[in-house]
Image (cartoon, rainbow, N blue to C red; front, side, top):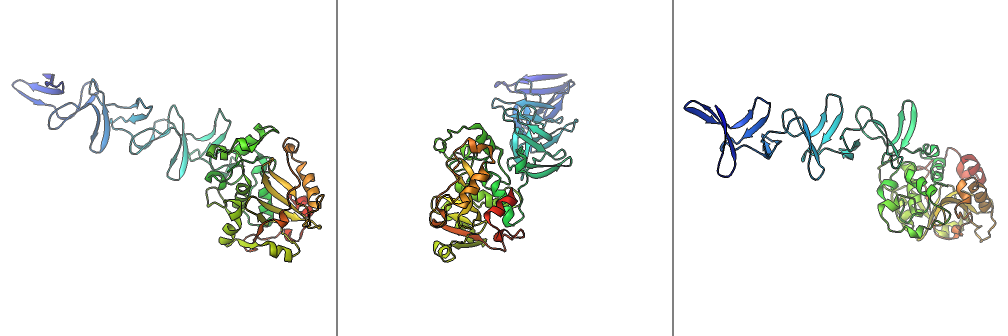
Length: 419
């Protein structure tokens, strides 16, 4: 005869009585209905709720004492766990009969949901089922597209070939849907440095602190968020309304040194997530020369060279920084920079003597007119006299080569080649 018993505190025992002899159940016991319980080996008390047995975690229902088996349980904090057919709590990777994969925290058993990093790789687990995503996934609210390896589930970043077609993904996994941003290259030439620096023109607004967060400063290619912010604003855009320096705000665009640091990253690194090349504008020359990438040219040295500047030179002072696209015969230069007026743009400087209406300004007006945003935002195709203001960082030829002969071309020739 088998029977249950309770002590004065309400704790339950189970006895197996056979005539005058009988014994108290201890350890594991499975009844005819396949309910499994555990009784303390010493006291015989029936275990309820959480218990760790032989280094594995189990959950026993409070009323019946039956162990949770082959079931997902979600607690009051919306944490979901899975208990296997052998009743113990799942940890790590688990694959069901349909070959669907889930991942459970190795310590808590919590089922992963949403984007999660495991080791050095990022995965996405559907919020309701916890199943690992594979293939293409679209965020229905924001329209972002991601791709997860069909075999491993690892999120794609950088440039990937999928079904014979090349796609570019940001370091956050978002597909870059703008075709013009999929050609960023790391081949270290003057031309490629300038071609990469042109990518955000007409697509990226000025945002205070933009490009200084790690995800954007070490990003290969343009962030979709920059273009979305650019497209969603009107001609009345004022960056001063967005100076909270939160990461969410910083990710909407670039500031002047964020733009230059991002541009340098494009040519110095082959994939996202490497070392940063971004700092405040006044520190850029010492940052890059300190890395052995080139040398700093002072105002005195510029004057002695009759204001000779080269494509790829990076100008900077304590409040601004810019990239030289090329120099004209009147010594004015076409530059790339990120301005508070409208973001990343092409501008022209006056001549070293301060004459506006320069050849560089006319070239800037010609090429900026090709961008749709030129009629929407307040682009200033004429800049300050940056030739006479600040120092310049100049690349070593061992860092950036010049197989295209840009160092011997005029600004007009360089722009015609780039466009």
